[in-house]
Image (cartoon, rainbow, N blue to C red; front, side, top):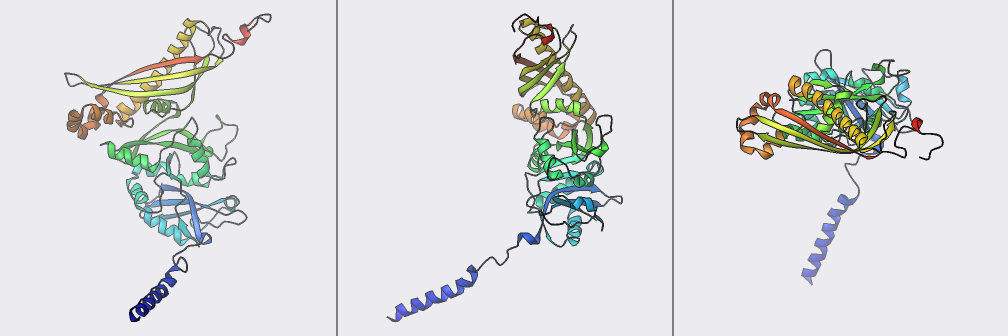
Length: 405
């Protein structure tokens, strides 16, 4: 009986001490206490300091408050985001100063975009990447961009078609003209490549684009090629035209429209590439010469024909196939000349291909890949095949009115 009483008392004591621990989340943080960061931009200050700009979500129906060195453009608080900027000796220091300007606690769990300004990228972003990857709230799947101007200008944009510049950038990357590069991809490339090479989508604000290409300057972000990085420093920029060659070499090309002028023909033929596949075939000959064949195979549909060629004839289709293959090969060769020879940056993963096929040779060559890569003999073998010519085979203007199609 005595033993039973002791057990009951023990149970009561355990329950008494457990109840306070179950009465709620002592460290909870209400959403009204948080400043939710959607995107961040990093620039190089005039005196070498880091300039951090954050784009913060503003709940609908409420006026946002932000700061940019103590001042805020009133027009920027009318949307769903506001912008705050601060400087520091490092990115972590700049973030702490940003927090001092806000009445709410910064929350980075929804930050999906990081933009580096051109000057900061040319100085080096390794220290910034180190902080972003160490800080627990950052997302490793956040997309990373580099801009031709200042990152703060991209953060200030309030696009008309999207809710924020962050969302506009992410949607732009999903289109055929651009690509997505996230933090995880950057780290993988830096680990796998001894030269720590990678590329980032290169964007520009609409205000930086001349009226020659647009009726008026708009508050939009535009894709304008890729920035080439080596050991965390941007060593060059490839324009929009040559970027296609980079995408084909890295197997990142999406649906793409190519317009060509067939040999001995007037007018043009436009085709839409619906699928492509790129493979590397490395080889080291007896003389120690490193060679690599790039094989690209693709299928396409004809979407416009302004020539007089009848595309139902096999010889004409063969002519279009060859013209498309030559055009792609030309872009690849020009991209290789600029990146392989001038920048000496293996952003294509060719070194990894040699490592898999020739591990012993790679073990000796990887530390001097920077010198060896420009000497690799690269040959592009491109084969494009038209699989659909459309409803009419010749141009519609060549059809006789009384003939059936």
